[in-house]
Amino acid sequence: MAQNGNIKTNIFQKLEKFGDLFIINILFIITSIPIFTIGAATTAMYAFTTKLVKDQEGPVWKSYWSAFKKNFKPATKVWLVILVILAAMYVEYVLSFSMGGLGYALILGLMALEAVFLSFTLPMLFPMVARYENTTGNYIKNSFLICIANLGSWFYMFFIWVLPIALYASNNKILYYTWVLWLLILIGVLAYASSMVVNRLYDKMENKDGSETETEEADDGEKLPMGRITKHLIDTSKINADEGDTEHDDARE
Image (cartoon, rainbow, N blue to C red; front, side, top):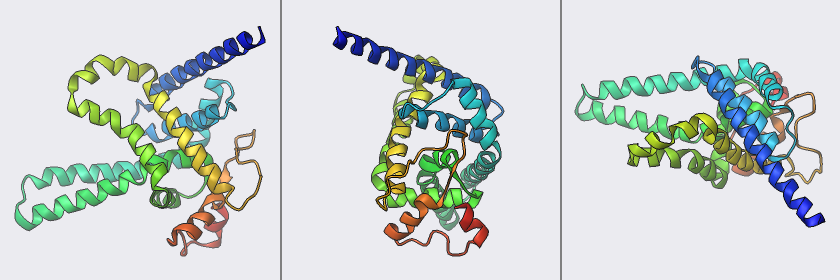
């Protein structure tokens, strides 16, 4: 009887998580409609799903809206930088049709570099904004460096989001038959799967010194200082993450 009760409890908990992911998916879609709010919406979604993975989530709407408001400014700044890069890539793509020879090769090379940079920055970027306190430039830089220094985690994150895109590119009918699922739950499911990777990586980096200190955010939503992980990033990757920062920036990290 006790075993049956445990099974029923586990099933109920899983159904409850799917319900939370459904609500998060809808909230993300609605709050992303203005386009410029996509950064804040993505950050708020990760703020919730990273806690959902650890069964530390609160009420969905309250948690999401609180994270959305709290992270709106830093997440929007980061998102605007990404938009500028994407806009530049589009302009370069258009210009490439009117160029030939060396100019064409240079444009393609620049676009390739920008694509690689985004590929190694975006997977960890918004989960980082949701979890840590930092400046716009340091968010982008440290996200790139962490992906470079942790290629295994980067690959999983990249694979989770790129595989569906590759499937749709190979067969447009897949999108035709599944677009409703994207509107209802698939984005939330992918964010949840990504959060499993993110939590494991960040917890490992924060506890690399052997400390048993709790790694989650405080109950009041306070974010952690970026130095909790960048100090290990610098030590392990031998990449200079921030020699030029002022003492103020170091304190924020």
